Image 1 (cartoon, rainbow, N blue to C red):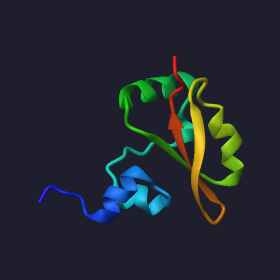
Image 2: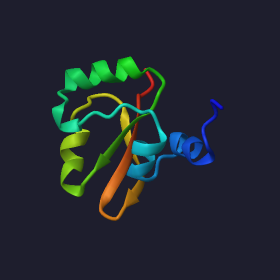
Image 3: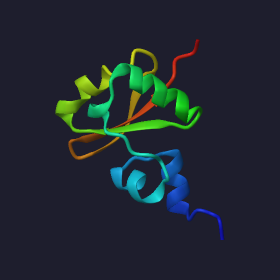
Amino acid sequence: MGQNPPPARRARRHPTNERHILYYTDFPLVRWDTLKPERFARLAAAVGPRPLFAVLFPHEVTDAMKINSTGLWTQIGAVRQVTIWRWAPTAP
């Protein structure tokens, strides 16, 4: 008891499918299109070392990547046309 099953552990480290994020993690969900750059900065500060992920359709990628002025988004997976991105802060 208290331990995550293998799919949950794998999803926390490498969420390559939007279902992994929804069903196997306790990651908070935030809609990217509700964030302004200053709110994204507060969100990034609040999560600390925990990862931030974005699950985006092709037409959302360009606009979603504009909401942060620091950090780097890296595509880590895709399911059909939907891409999954991980954000990491840039080194100071």
